[in-house]
Length: 244
Ligand SMILES: Nc1ncnc2c1ncn2[C@@H]1O[C@H](COP(=O)(O)OP(=O)(O)OP(=O)(O)O)[C@@H](O)[C@H]1O
Ligand SMILES: [Mg+2]
Image 1 (cartoon, rainbow, N blue to C red):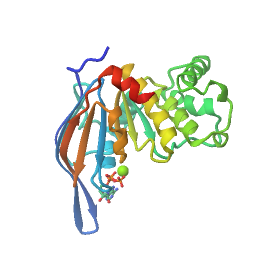
Image 2: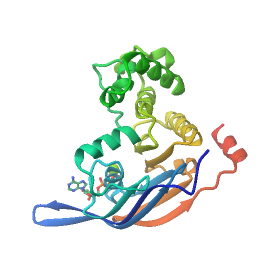
Image 3: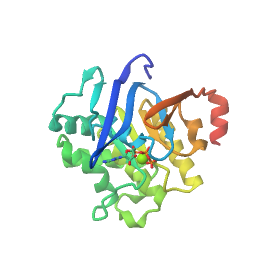
């Protein structure tokens, strides 16, 4: 199912600076990063270490000042904004700490929104897809509910369904459990693990050491550099026990 040999992302010599008045802040320093298809990567590190900045670059929301970035073997460092947006919409799904659902739309409409932008499916196809994704995230009964009628954990499930709607190859999640209690976090992590086992590559940022067990690789950042890396081994039996 997963092919560990295919790099989905290859970044080399990446630097990012922010200019603050007269000062230049060197936020990402000479980063090299290769992400393989099928990985579940967690990025950890103190506040301000550069995690979100890195996620924004991986997710085509920002660009590095130097270095190369290849996505599925294609050099994307030089793509223009329109091409990058289209890449982002087609290949990536985003999940954030604050869910970012649209309150004036119901649950099903929130999930269909990226399809609407993509413009490839008719309404009937969109509806079928959003309903099947609601099944995947365990919220089939809430399809016409309002955003405000859902708990935080349920809202994050909707956000995950929305992230999946264009069948992305990569899911980017910046602190997806940051606003959730421990039990709800575990439910969300089990859902993400399930998606990973079905072949989705995931890059997630977290502060929570307890969540490391869900990853296949943990990268620790410090002051804009990668400090250490841990490969997490998953004995399938003990892993299932952990989740029980
Ligand atoms: N748009 C920006 N303009 C100027 N400085 C920025 C900008 N975005 C981030 N920074 C700075 O870059 C550094 C890294 O920020 P970043 O948001 O990547 O950290 P983080 O590791 O995600 O932190 P947290 O855990 O608090 O989310 C910080 O010093 C931050 O102030
Ligand atoms: Mg951050």
